[in-house]
Image (tube, rainbow, N blue to C red; front, side):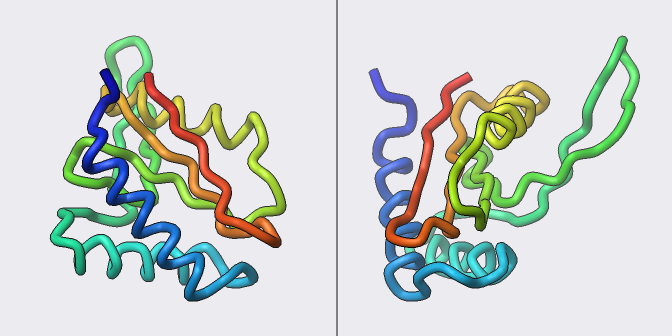
Length: 122
């Protein structure tokens, strides 16, 4: 069973629409705002820079900010770099752990010839 298959398919479609329109070379914030717009055009509830509390030993030790949270079910972490690295994957895994959300996508708009993405299930 694939988690949130319909919603995932639509999210990825929106990300490709943004990449196909803008290409690479913009700052992350441009892709974030464009993707938010595209998601909302497709009637998908989403928010940007959503704070996530981080706990250690039962106390809050800080906040992370998730790039985009889709319907409280999927975390989108956006990048604008040449390639996705393990440190980016680890960052998304930490967001999933902290929120107890099971599904996230790492979307890299910085690759020269394609939208690069990784699906992470925690």
